[in-house]
Length: 155
Image 1: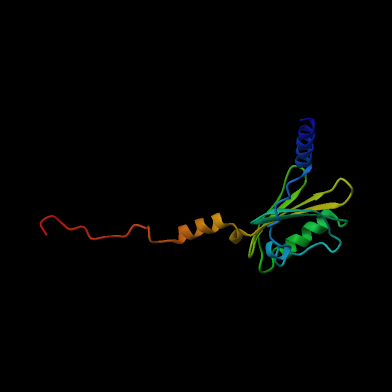
Image 2: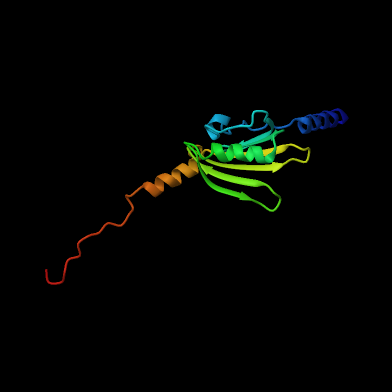
């Protein structure tokens, strides 16, 4: 009986030590989320995260915040981009929103190590099946009301 208990405990410990494999990264590739996007020449990728329909890249650059912001302002006013919003929040972070082939959010802030932090957030809406389904449903005109002739009384 003692042997069976020892085997059971060893088995439970082995199961507890096993970690579930992380899910495969299904986030978009850089070029898919950030087509035709300018990047600082010395930009160093700090983090990359995403979901099926979005990607976030955080970079750091030795360039000044003003130089990085000017690069994005200039780049996002050229085709295929259109700069929609350019604001500064209470922390001094510049937040840009642009539309092109895909929507794009850029946050440029001073880093605590004397560098400039750049957050790029790109959406790839066509990869999200719920988004596509909703767009297709909105475009479906089968369920729209159609005018019809109402017979007059006495006809």
